[in-house]
Length: 185
Image (cartoon, rainbow, N blue to C red; front, side, top):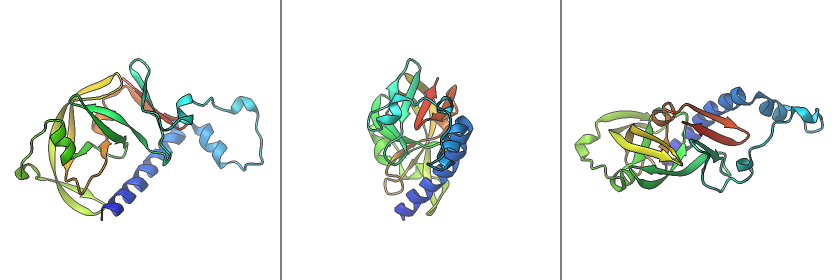
């Protein structure tokens, strides 16, 4: 059941990610669609970010900018700080909210009771209950956002924490470029 949820989440994320990638860098998509035998002028090539070649490194801060390289699967994962505690997460532009599991919620100091899980959330595996919480501070590199709304889901329903739009929309900009995600505050 969780595999189906993750698989559907990957499909939805990819379907959202491809148009964003095309919008931010149409030449990259066009070059991928051209046959390998065709050659174009070298001036058309976009310079690659150095981070794109090293996907296993954590996000690199650039002042109030952070570049997150895609991992081997094409996902943007990095270490974040939730309420000052380090937490691994995957950036998901298809997720409306930041979503964390109950284990992460406990680690970052959020106490929940069974009665807190009253918000119905539709997933690929059906409707489940979630708790709505506020993360005091969510940080990646030197980018920090206070008062981020999040959903807490059962550990069985969510293995990896998702960094969704409730965080991303509060940034000045986020864009995919040459296999890396640029976050700017």
